[in-house]
View 1 (tube, rainbow, N blue to C red):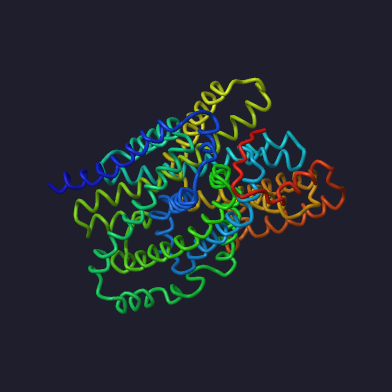
View 2: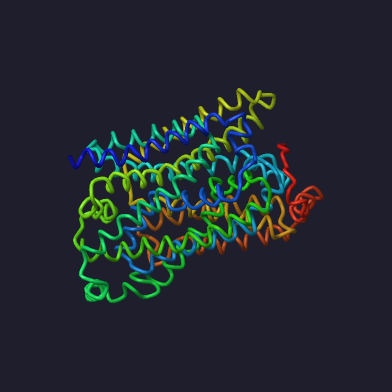
Length: 490
């Protein structure tokens, strides 16, 4: 009977997903619709999409595990993400929307008058996007293994298939709509399990006393982390989000720039309070499961232990919604970048819109397949995989994009030097750290970002931007009628 109630809870949430998916599929009208939802998205859809993708299964599993192990120091991750939302919605997003393209590579190629930036940046994006997707497959694999008793490999494959189906059939429209539904479902998944967890403990005072007796630094500003490592995590996730096309392309989908500003206000009011609830849940979880074998299974473990069967089913499905919202958006971002910036711009400039849509969907399948081995192998903890991906994305993408919008004198050579040096330093630093040559007390992120910033400035000072680069920069500064629906795609 318990199993029946669990499956009923799962089925209820999956039914909502299917209804939203079918409605979204019927709304799709072409390539622009598939890539950027026809540029008709309102602020509440963008807010929900940023929130749902930002939470993802990584919060239920990975960040909960690090809250469990490192305490308050882990909060530097959501604080970094919160700052990234501020920069994205108030500083970067409106300028991208005003620019009116389809991909981030489009923007960089135009900003620096360098067509070669399109394929190069697309390939770099695809590499770390595969790593991110692999981490998401780990999340789905762990969930379905616990929920249905499938083998981990089978669970991972099921996750991939569901993600691919939703991405291929709906594109950005289905992503925004399922994220909107997913926001409410995943918040409910967290909130409805908390009372059972709190009720099982002996009160807040006993919980904190017990934890402090084992880990005196657990509730300090950096928790069990060093100051340098805490700051490293802050900058990894701050710049990582700035360089992730999965988030940036949301702004191309907005009706106008005002909707992006509204989305920024919405996400600011929502994100950190929810993350605080996750932290409180992890505190109680540490008290009740002090010797858990795998900290990444904490949320799943205490939900199965204390919640009623129907709640378990709905909560687990809610967590999968969190996994899917991130996976679909990141998969679409990688596929649209490769499809448009390499196939359409280099291989076949005269490709029809219908064929371009098919090519993009085939690339979705390719990227999904390439990331499967990472998901199955599970070579590291979820957040370790994501830290690696965001290290490359942040230093080689996020910083360059941010500087390109606020440094008028940045040149083509400066952009190239920044992207190449950041990518090389990020990968080399990570390899040396894993080899034990570099200390683990500081992540490669901080020195990589600082060095990249200096390199971009120095190289740009050696030359001058041409007239086209300056014109593109100035175009982003102009503020057209906020109700103007800029539909152009170049």
